Amino acid sequence: MNSEQIKSKLEAAIADSQVEVSSDGSHVQVVVVSPAFEGLNAVKKQQLVYAALQDAISSGAIHAVQMKTYTPDEWSNHHA
Image (cartoon, rainbow, N blue to C red; front, side, top):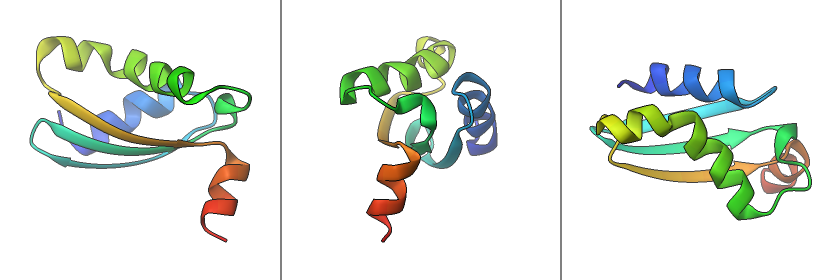
C-alpha cells in the first residue's frame, strides 16, 4: 500500500481531515489534522486512525503506524 492510498483511506474515513503520509515499506508515519478530533483524548484519536487502516493492518500491508493527531487549533498552535 503506497502513501497516496493510505492518505486517501484516512481522508475518506476522518471528516475534513488533512493528512500527510510517509512510509518506509510497511512502516508508516502519518500526521492527521481534523476537527473530528475535537474533544477526544489521544487514545480516541488513535482509534479513529487505526479504524481507517484496519484492513491494511490486518492484511499485513501495514506493519506499524506512527501517528501524530491534531485538531486544527492544535495544529496552528504547533506551527505558530
